[in-house]
Length: 197
Image (cartoon, rainbow, N blue to C red):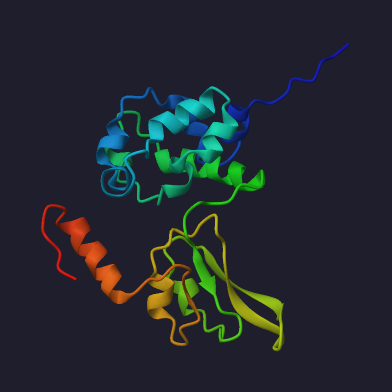
């Protein structure tokens, strides 16, 4: 009698391109020391902790970990890693499994106003995360048309799409003014400086 061996969460991560490096990490923390997300955005961001969760089969914990959703795949960590692991590949493999299980990103993502979108494609070209695609869709009052669509699992809310959109049909769902963007950028560049509104 043969018994089928159930694949572990780590097996699933390893089966996705990028995830094959999962068990090469020995938790030295060098990736964390080089990461701009951890330093400037969220102190809870921690690739080595996420990798550990994946190795231990803690899929639910990995899916809810902010690290799964905040990695921008900038790969600043890669040259510093003594094991030469593309940490972003492992994180994106976990993110893909999270999306497949029905989880959604907690990151505020760009939204498309389908009533005004002209499907010029500028937003898709500008998106560094390949989160925007043009797709044919039935839109109320407009019928079957081509419009931009945002993959919430890939969007990192950088705002580039809104900056290039000539019809102002796409942008971050929360209030996102130029003043707020410049203030945030200034604070990021000069964390100790006073910013006057």
